[in-house]
Length: 148
Image (cartoon, rainbow, N blue to C red; front, top):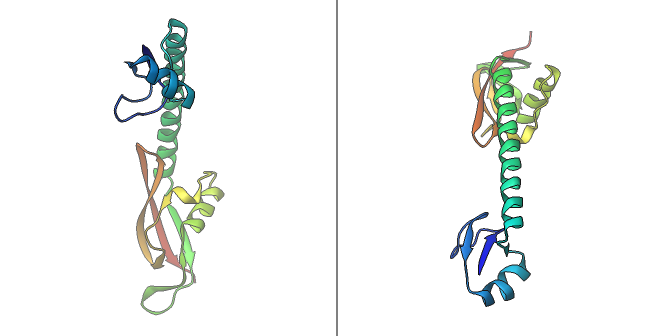
C-alpha cells in the first residue's frame, strides 16, 4: 500500500514522501496516528498544492527579511549614556534598549532576535547581530557615546 507521509519518520522518510508500506502497518498505525494518508491521486494533488503554497509563503517571508536587512544595515544607531572613568557606563546597553531605539526609527524589531551575547558596558562602536530569518542575519552598527 502506498501512503503519503505527513510526519518525518526515521525508518520511512520525510514529510511529503510517497512510500510503499505493508497494508496492516498503514491501516493500524500510520493512518490512525496521523503520520500518513493514503496515496490517492486526490491526496497527491492536494499535497502538491500545499507544497506550492508553502514554497510561495517561504519565499515571501525570505524576501521581506532581506528588505528589512537592507534597512537595518543602512541605519546605524547612536546611543547616548552616562559614563564614568575609563569609559565605563553607568548601567548597560541591552537588546531591549536597542529594540526601543530601532522602534523610534520606524523599524519594529522583536528584542529576542537581537543577538547580544553580553550587555554593552563601555563606550565605543559595536556590531550587533539581528537574526531576521534562519537564512538572513543583519549586522547592526551601534555606537555608544558619552552624555555631556
